[in-house]
Amino acid sequence: MLQLVVGSNNPGKIREIRQMLAAWDMKVVSYSEAGGAGDLPEEGQTFEENAAAKAVEAARRTGLLALADDSGLCVEALGGRPGVLSALYGGAQADDATRCRLLLEELRAAATTNRLAEFVCVLALATPEGLVACWAGRVVGVIADEPRGAGGFGYDPIFLYLPAGRTLAEMPPQEKNAVSHRGRAVRRLPEVLSRHGFTP
Ligand code: ITT
Image (tube, rainbow, N blue to C red; front, top):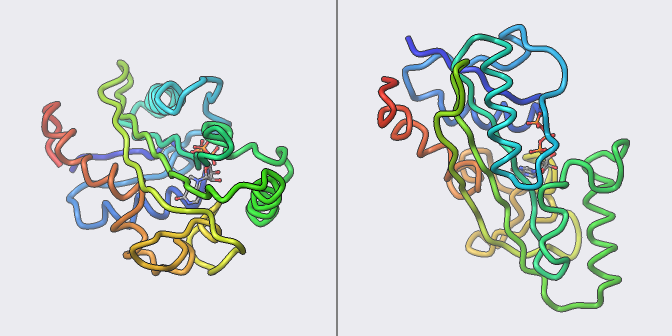
């Protein structure tokens, strides 16, 4: 059976990727389960550079086929920030709730009516020999006035998905996965695998 390591230390991402790949005939293991330790490199300027670096390093360190996810929230009125730096917004010590609150405050201070935002997820696939593929998934929404909902992780409570009239944190996991940036990217994985000769 095809074995795939998820090169991430973010429990929210790992949970969602596992849920989405559960229907496929492959063994999905987390980076720590595969014996991977320590942070994966994230020094790039783009989602693509970071996803590729994390996948290549996770594959090299574990000796397995690896999938990595670099993602973030891009707010139009903030020039696309926090973007690639979403995990660091508010400083390394800030938790998800603090990051959401700081972002709402920054948007309020910007005194704009433009609350458009986009979640981006770039996935990269690598073997211990190097990068195989890199591709993206996106979802458009608006920043809510207040955090709402307890599901998901990260910025989900402030990301309003307009067709549902709810934030991603108010949507059950299957509903979030059906429309999310990560869901859109993960659903392309089987096709990417088979295009490169890996049979899921
Ligand atoms: P790994 O690099 O170990 O995978 P990370 O948390 O550092 O974990 P990123 O650098 O890709 O990962 O940062 C992505 C951040 O963007 C993440 O910490 C969240 O704050 C946010 N984010 C990404 N996907 C999200 C989602 O589906 N819902 C809410 N927030 C999300």
